[in-house]
Image (cartoon, rainbow, N blue to C red; front, side, top):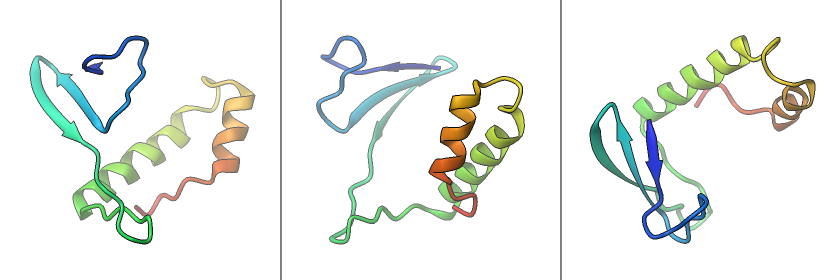
Length: 82
């Protein structure tokens, strides 16, 4: 996967537009806008993708990531249900 930030160097992005290329196919991603309470509404599919990603990370990181990173992950207490 390649992520490019148009018009920016060193990974700095001033806006909410990211250009993502996955396996040679280009897509454009625009971040969702929070509602009046600051909440971002994700689809059930997006929630399922998050669930799969975070639960997989929690399984594979021990023994691979530094103890400081593992402690930070635990302290951030990412939800698994969305």
